[in-house]
Image (cartoon, rainbow, N blue to C red; front, side, top):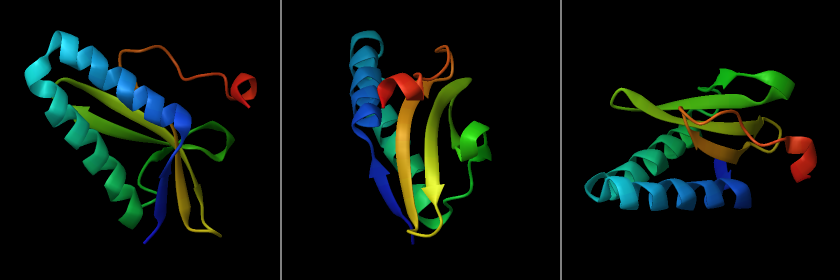
Length: 102
């Protein structure tokens, strides 16, 4: 099984997404948190399940009703580690600029 590591940026994204839901849809905030973590846990068993995107990264689509979330991650097959880089709602525009964040 692969080790799944949530980066500081992804952890902050998760907090931001849940905080937004607490204000907008408090009843579904906890369920969405559980949904996101459950989806990330799938990467332990199936680290290559996400669709390939640029620069060797992968994107996991996490459905929630008619919308959902996206997790951008990298999988290092040599170390068998999955690093979740960022999370976002599907309606949000783009991911962060990785070069600016490093």
